[in-house]
Structure formats: C-alpha cells, structure tokens
Figure 1 (cartoon, rainbow over the protein chains, first blue to last red):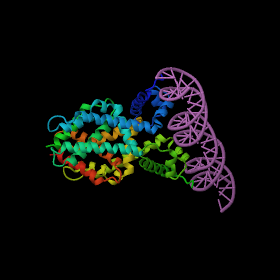
Figure 2: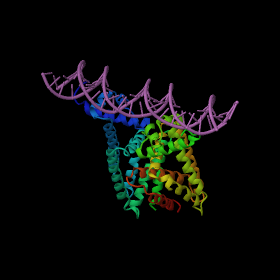
Figure 3: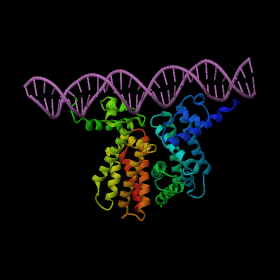
Figure 4: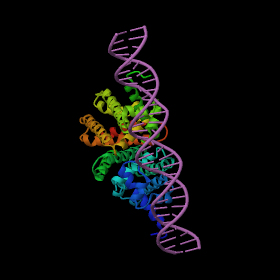
Length: 188
Length: 188
DNA sequence: TATCTTTAATTGACTGACCAATCAAGAACA
DNA sequence: TGTTCTTGATTGGTCAGTCAATTAAAGATA
C-alpha cells in the first residue's frame, strides 16, 4: 500500500467518512477513531493528514459548501425569467445536497459556527453568496428583492431543519414544492 | 442551609443554568460541573436531584416548551379574524422565547432530538400542537390551511436558526415583520 | 426545655471510561 | 538510501457518575 500519492485519497475518504458519521450520529460528538475506522484507516493517520479533529470538521464543511456551490453554478443561468431562481432552489434539493446524512451534517456544521470562528467565516461566505444570488435572481421579478431573498433563505433553512428531524426518508420533491408554492405567491 | 424543601428550588436553578450555559456555549457540550457552578452548587448535587445529565437536558427542554406553550395560551384567542394567528406568531417572538440564550438552547435541543428518543417525542408533541394550532387559525383565512401551516412552521424555524447564527443582538421586531409580511402575501 | 432520632441536603474525593493528540518505529515503494 | 505511509502504544486530560461522610433542620419524647 505505501505508494506515494495517498494523501488526497486518504483526505477525501476521511471527509466522506466525517460527513457520514456526523450525519449518522446527528451530532458533532463523533470521535476521530470512528471517522478513521469508517474511512478504513487508523486514528493516527487521520491526525497525520489533518493535524486535528477541528481541521477535519472544517474541511468537511468546506467540502459540503463547495459541492453545493458547484451544483448551483452548474444550473445557472437556467431558462426563462425564473431560471436563476429555479437553479438555486433546485440545487438546494438536489440529491447530493439533500441526502439525510448531508443535511444532518450541514445542520451540525451550522452549530459548529456558533463556537468556531473559521466555521462562522465559512458560513458567512455561504450566506452572503446565497443572498446575492437570490437578490440577483429576484430583481426582475419582485419589487423588493432583498426582503423576498431573506424570507426565501430562512424558508430553505427551515425546511432543511424539518427534513432532518422528520423520521423516515426526507422527501425532496415535497420540500421543493413547498418552496415553489411560496414563490408563486410572492411573485404575483 | 439544610432546610427541607430545597429540591424544587435547586431543580429550577439547575434548569435555568442549563439553558443559560447551553445558550452561551452554543452547544450541548456543557459539563455538569459548569451547570452546577452556574446554579451555585456542587456537581454531585446536580446528579443527586436529576440522576443524570440527560435528565437535566430533558427537563430543560420540557421547561422551554412549557413556557412557550403557556405564552401561546395566554394570547389566545386574540382579537379579530387573524387573532389566533397573531397570538401564535407573537408568542414565538415574545422576549422570553426569543432571547439569544433561549433560542440557542432551543436549537440545540432540536439537535438532541436527533439522538435522544425522549427529546424526539417532546419535539413531536410540540410540532403537532403547533401544527394543529396553526391549521385552526388558518382555516377561516385560506383555501389550504395545511399547506400554509407547513410553510409558516418552517419559516419560523428558519428565522430562529438565522437569529442564532447572526452575531449581535437578535431582533425580534424584524423577525416578526418577516413572518407577517409572508402572511400578508399568503392571505390574499 | 433539653435531648435524642430521623431525614433531607450537601459535598469532597474518587473511579472508570473515553478520547485527542503524540511518538517512535516498522513497512513498502522510488 | 531516503521518503512516504502507516500504526500500536502511550500520555495527559476530561468528565459523568458514585459514595461515604458531614451538617443541620424537623420531629419525637420525656
């Protein structure tokens, strides 16, 4: 095994394992040993590559945000006057962003932002970008794009929160419909 | 000091301290020692009265839900056709329910529901009651009360989540306005 | 009133478990 | 040979929960 070039593979495996374990546990209370075992290596190796548990979490959070950002970008600009809006909302409920483990990890990284400055910074960047994307998308559609963007952002977060808490499979279709129904009302 | 009748006083102090410390830490990662110190007693006494940290958390959660439930009940039925609705939304953003520590604790108890069956049960009871209250309030106002109730519930949760994450003081007035603006649109 | 008994309240000290992080050493390739 | 990869063993620290012992009020008895 000790071939060179293991680092990116190991790191990716650890990040995946982190999201999975955090999502599964529903809490950041996950040990490095658990993560490492899930990723098929010893805890010492996880420390070797990331230096600390905190860095593992932050990398996992960055990864989630990157995946989300990319799936928005892929859908832009979309078609028609509501193309941009559909792209953003659609990305939020796309399978890779709306799987149970991912959403649960997402929510828990939200919580991490309460106590970790770097996590807070990452979250602010995400919020800012979402906000400006939404405002841009809403400008041609409503009188007050900032206000609708605020509401829409809160609504998406709320739906995410409830999706995690509801037992059974999370239903992306229903969730997305709720958002679009709101938009149909707001975009009279 | 060993006067009889200390139990309810001690328990109340511990519950307050728990909400404060969880809110302050922004996480359930709070030690019994911290809680007990904040409540002015030894960790051993906290265990004596509650038996376990888990029970302390659950009692605190019950307390928050009870306070919220009571503040809704106090405002019902309210005045006018939207009286019930105003009562429910108003209670959600009343000072005792919308202080930073309380909201932060609330969100963290949400997270507890992911891993603790009893916490999940309490949360389900709250959700069910909120839902039926909202549907009752909305029935005379909209065609599709269940759908609007769902959206409104998610929106309130989302606003709570964002209130916690925003640095600086949480602004109940702005938060409440966002909800009422949505309602003005939904209740065309 | 004085004294004894019971009981609630309270804590310091301790234990057992867990865990993040370190390190030194081994294994396998270039 | 040197570099990268890898881990077992260890360390230092934290924490939930337990326990035995102490304090002092409440209540009983005479």
